[in-house]
Image (tube, rainbow, N blue to C red; front, side, top):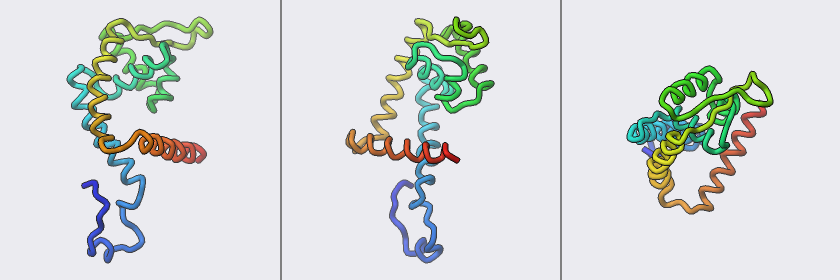
Length: 157
């Protein structure tokens, strides 16, 4: 349940800690629910969440190295390599060695990949709209700023 109401019993049990007042409780639960919904939603486009992330990063940058995708998609390089291989086999991306450094593999969308991104984005936008229903664009921007600050702080550890 996503309400922040506390019962008398909750307050009497442990006055020092209530999970509903702990921001990471909300972050973890929002992420888990978002992932569940996106898995179901992306099946309509014959994609999973990890494939969607790789396609979206590649779409955003035009072409991206495996290491860039891993960084931006918050995934390990071997995992991204496997996902890229699967997407290549499905005809959604192509790969080539970088002209600047032949050790670097660059990933580019094919026409089918661009079409898949459009299809997936149409599905994902419905999730976004529902998730942020009742929030102004300024509230969403403030939340993004706050979460960005939390991430920056955690990256300092």
